[in-house]
Image (cartoon, rainbow, N blue to C red):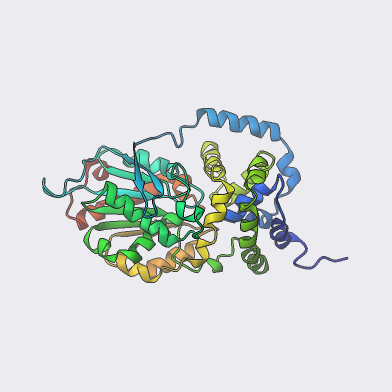
Length: 397
């Protein structure tokens, strides 16, 4: 009997995920959160290939875990209360001077980094290392992510939203950078957070923001993202994914206990959706796996619905005239580069950089290029704000 289009191939892989809650479901769970399962299925990854050499891969992972320095850089810790009381973990880094309200003349730039979905501030490892000399850097973990507290409002029954993240960002700015020019850098959900802030506080962008970087993100139209699937598979995925996330978010202990069983499968899917090339440092690949695996399934489920509701094209008007970098990998399946092009069209004068062959985690895959573009943005921002760029920016990559 011939199978129909909904019974085989990538469409079937997505449909089967709707009932998954076993060992391999850990891969399906995070795969749904970042489109990994669907993309892996579309790529035709065979399970038997995943089981060959499993012991060798586990030994290799252990060696990478023991030696890799990625995510090891730390700053000066702070805790900032979000509007609902959720405690947000913040780190201040860099050797640049603290803002003083302008009492000593032109104030220094503060560069604030916002990470993406299922990640934490350590995803900016290379940028932290490259820019900390002479600059004042701020890194924070979005609510329910990393070292920040689980969202109090969500636990009380209020759905998560990108608008809420915009309010969190404002709280961080008020607490640790209340004066002086700002450069806001956002990746994926972090870029959406910056847009939400622009929507809520356009006056902040008129008065204090001197530059913005939107990396691997989009301003809306999430439901049009195909995740690398054929049209039928993408439509089915978008239809079943919210229900799957709710189901698995209610089975936290079962799913978390099974993650070791699905580790090899998840690793393939993670790579498929994180990176565009095959020549990425294995230590970086492993680091990305650790970041994604560290996000509990109930947090994955908490935030998945927010992307369909994210529509902030109008908010881009607040960035008009500001030094802006819009950057994306050409092989990004989560936030395709066409969305970056659409944002850049609405921002005359923005610098659009499409990184050939790179995937969603472009700041980890191509750190030298991303660092170079951020330094160029900081030079423009310093000129815009009439602030003297520090030596690290003048002499940077």
